[in-house]
Amino acid sequence: MWKRGHRSRTVVATAAAVLLGVAGWAACDASGGNAPGPQGSSTSSKPSPKPTPTWDRSPRSLAAVGDSITRGFDACSVLADCPESSWATGSDAQVNSLAVRLLGKTGAARRSWNYAVSGSRMADLPGQMAQAATRKPELVTVMAGANDACRASVSAMTSVSDFRAQFEDAMTTLREALPKTQVYVSSVPDLKRLWSEGRTNELGKQIWKLGICPSMLGDADALDSAAKLRRDTVQDRVEAYNEVLEEVCEKDLRCRFDGGAVFDFRFGTAQLSHWDWFHPSKNGQARLAEMAYRAVTATKPSD
Image (cartoon, rainbow, N blue to C red; front, side):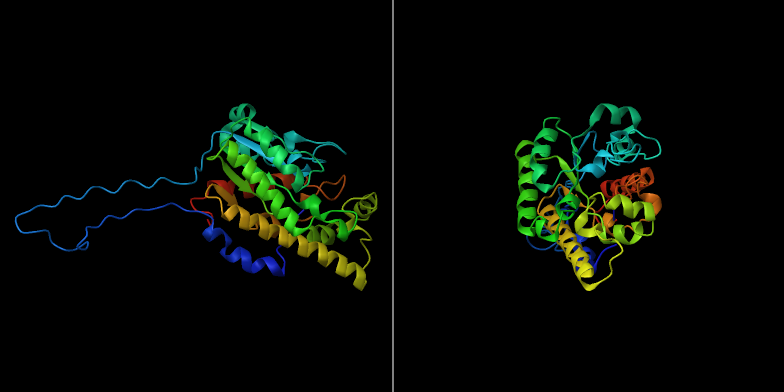
């Protein structure tokens, strides 16, 4: 579920560069760095302290919060969660989850936890954060927002202001318990690309009629102006959600937004579950794990 639209292109170009970095210190005396000391005296400079990275690229524990994507829904069996196939905490070797990449197979089994819930919206995130905080993880992964846009109608989508308040509440909940825990925030996938890719499959379109993301996927073959406006409205809302995720994360020194990587990912049908043509397949989960690992282990957010 994932290409960046017109509103987010300009945002992402500068997003990663301002999230956070490594502070540096320089020492110079009051008379200037190159000025000689008084005659007959010697000056000794105190060595500058080594900068302490704000971001630890090797966290030793991980908790995941979010929705059905992080639960691995429909990745390994029909109409069921497959947490073992989760991009964040799964044990499936075909996925090679973020937890396995960071902690190793044994470490992931002992020190990673999945508190995501299928069907969750951003309003559910504070409660999940509270649960995650009880484990005192060094890293929390966040992937939420698709269900806020995937509603029965465009009028039922979560407003941007509510989405912002709910995400801020979730971050506050975590920070009150764990001020130093790091947070990786994924962008919301490109739902319009999901429509354009999935609609090429006749079976997929029939499954969508059961009520999967009606705001975007309803009447999949309709190309009239009303259908176009509906889809564009959903896409605009997703882009606005991603701006919120970026802006809120940017205010926290221990938070990294993915720079729009998930939204920009040009997935195809191989990355979609062939049970619902909506959720990521194991291949799609593996791609999500790759993107997360790159962001978490980058020396700088823009790397």
